[in-house]
Image 1 (spheres, rainbow, N blue to C red):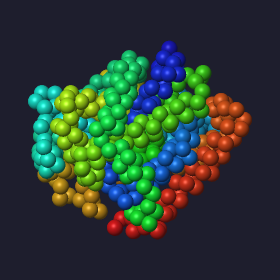
Image 2: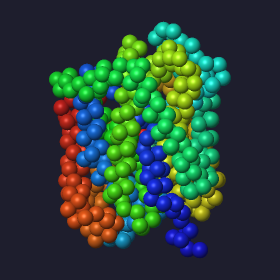
Image 3: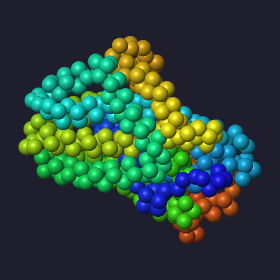
Image 4: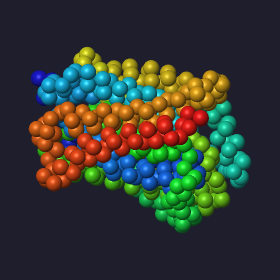
Length: 456
Ligand code: PHE
């Protein structure tokens, strides 16, 4: 069998939409969104507006561009870049972009798995004994006890890594696709319940006021780049994940329509989660600016107070775990597909072999919260270094390069052939990709680096 014909493809267009939404919706929407928004108190509105504008004007066009490269190049991110570069007579240096993607994804996975581990820990606690906390002080103490215990962090990080590698090891269709088909519908269901509960028991008007309060004067340094970075993070852009998933898309799927679905549903779920979480936070008189532990320091109090709160908590953490799991799978897949295609290694072997070093880096991340907390780079612990390096720099810069590549280097013939859109829509997308995306990303960087004391 030739290499091309042995490549897997998703069962159908909906399967592809589902797995991509599965990749997009994750800790980013639930944990990261609420904690960055909470941390930019006073300028949350600006963060959210920048985020939504970036999803529409930068994220959506790039999503299409990444899938285009994956499908045209028919290979893992490195191979896809090489193949398309060759086809369009461009330098093979462009493959660097694929490298940045597959390594960047592993870097994200290392801390992503640790944070997911916190969620599994809380899930387990609610499942076996229930958690009864009565004051904000008690939730904080409970959270800090977990963070101070490296063994506990490493244990749940290990569990989560095993879950992730287990699915990737099973393959594209029988592992990744099936996992998504089971988890995503459940995730939608639990999310709707959570939002309804947020509206009933929480303070939705306060949440919305908090989220959409546009006080331009109060904008803090970093808020604008965080808004853009978050659009990248929450759409899984620039890290090879979408490119790898795109490489399993068949020729019949319409990239434009599919991406519209993914971006709209992804952003909507993000905002819904935010509204539900903040509504509960305010409804229980808590403050949203507690940092990465936000949902773990606020929600348990709400759970303790509601009838059937323990069951609800179990479902809530299940939702977070499912969301995180379907995303972490897409973080591991790009590198694994490169290993299997480049060296002909068995998938299972490649998946476990990649998971091991990533797990090790994750152990260092666990330690950065306690034993190694004093090791800082620019005032940041390892966890923050990895997160901010990926989200603020690697993702947007790799997005910039992708826009230049597809917009200016690949050649219109290939692009038109892959993106089956009506003439006018196509022109609109193509021009946004060529001008708005690069200019937008550059402006955000200039604004933050030149106008704000960003590293201060
Ligand atoms: N989009 C995922 C989330 O929001 C994270 C992710 C980033 C996944 C990059 C893949 C690639 O949680």
